[in-house]
Length: 449
Image 1 (cartoon, rainbow, N blue to C red):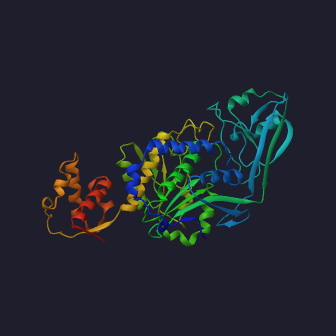
Image 2: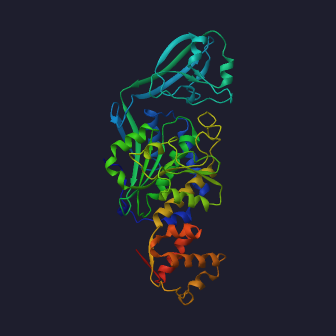
């Protein structure tokens, strides 16, 4: 199977260091936020035109390719469902007023509702109504993907205002043979070894849970597409659960290429960073993300793997077992606005989006710049002063730290430790260890293995 791939040979290519040096978190965060604003009104689901429209808008940022998988296709133990599309939905009271209106909020409809048009009493209607009594102003997000049903979601206050009488109920939807749609974009690096970045694209108007991951993935791909890279990078915008299962079933032959991976979700709120480890628990991606967070200057939390959450459940299933963790701010289900109408444009901030993208770039930097060296003068310390290395760092505020970084690199560059190992052992940021290695290599004291 092929996907749209960017050929690195066609570009002059900036370095990742250039990108990081020029990176402007507020500017990048604003670009992500504006993209969220554009996508927010669209009614998405696990299939249908809303997904296609959303991915089409993302194509303005990065040239992703759309894949269509027909209804009825078997993917492992699952089957691609019927395609769902919706045009309108409402509940009208006897005065003709819309007391629930899809045009005002697409969360008002139970996602994947079958078509219905009938009149009924409030007693008959109540079993089809869903609310959140504990947050009476918010509309819940509910679905009925894999069994045919219908319903409406309202705020508790809306429900309490409904009076006895006859109501006109309309859900102008279709559920019929069609396709599941997902987006894919691959950047070819110097090797075919891959880093996989995945996000779900199936929720309707929910900003943090869904749109923040979609837009951040697109902005990251845009930044990397013109960079000289060692790894190849594959980005997926997929419907939750069924999308990752579908992609994995169609791509088993290439899974051995994936060396690192991240699921992105809930990266736009102002909460502290959170990382959920892969099933392997101590994969390089697990250690790299924790290291980046530790040196970010911000609060963070690291969670062990559990088979609940987002698509990491599929990527880390025992028969697949990819080294993929989940990159988040506040995790799913841990903020009150989760899966409600309050997960809106006020919950996500440009500052949080920009900072999330910056930390992802720093993770990529470790993947890209990690290397193993051999000390060419391993018998006692080489004389650094006569090589100008002490003078090179003597005028800087962190001269002692830079000097110590060089000593760590010299001591552990024995052919058995890479730069990331040295960063972990020394407690220094990876970038500081890498810069020390650059200086030592330029002085002909290190050789690349």
